[in-house]
Amino acid sequence: MSAAAHHPVYTGGDTALSSVAEAIAADWAALGVRGSFLARNLDTGEQLGFDADEPVPLASVAKVPLALVVLDRIAAGELDPGRPVTVNPGTSSVGPTGLAAFRHPATVAVGDLLLLMLSVSDNAAADALFDLVPVAETDARLRAWGCDGIRVRHRMNHLYECAAGAAGNDFSLALELAVRDEGTGRHTIETLDPAHANAGTAAALVGLLQRVWRDEIATPAATAELRRLMGHQVFTQRLAAELRADTLRWSGKTGTFLHLRHEIGVVEADSGDRVAMAALTRATRRAGLAPDIDQAIGAAGRDAFEALRS
Image (cartoon, rainbow, N blue to C red; front, top):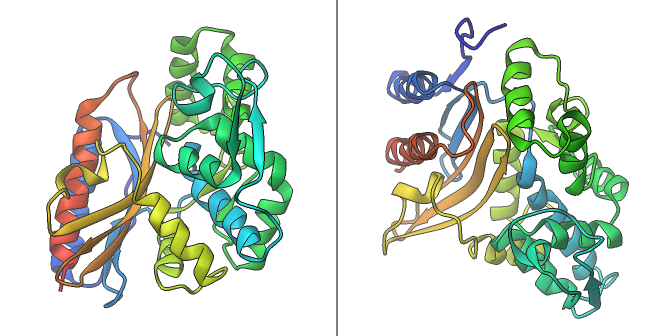
């Protein structure tokens, strides 16, 4: 099904909320964006969005469930947050930030790998954590917690391995393939196929955030630390873009790969309002840089928060 023929499935408790969801979907479609969006007031339960049950490759958003599993092991005394881990850039994961961008080996404690992974989306830090808590264990723990709409199937570097396998070192060709395949549903790059990728739905991700913010999953020590670490994210160009104020606090995690531009997180107001959001987008046009898409995600976050605050 082509992007032009797609008809979103809307979520909204009343006409006003549904109208906000419809306006967001229309704004995204006008920019050449397919996506899933869900925003939920964590205290009233009111929500709005569209296509919230559609599985989407998560890119770096997968680092949030990984962090929760690692933090749960730390809280259980099974993993020492001070344990030193040496990461060698010559053999570690590809990425533009953190240890992945280093030129020399570095030794970092487990707790600081978590900070690097969530604050600057460090792929090498994430895969170093996967060395300690393997992919299969992470996914199994999510299953045990009832997070059935989120799957962790591969390390972060596998994103780049699959892209290189399809397009060599030509990242522009990989982007072209990703956009082309989005319209056909047959994915040349395996990690863009929701059936093989680290994948999740907007509904499942908002549900995870709700449980983390309410201490209803893992242990309170783990969820509290995850909230603290997500509050250190340095990237503010998407959902947080229009939610920055002295009276608001944003805690989030972006995900970016080829045509994927995502973010999940929670905005908390001094008034007591708490709204969890997940914006998962796939561009239907070739755009390595797309500030207009980021801005549209930010506008969606603002409009949803205003509509859902008590």
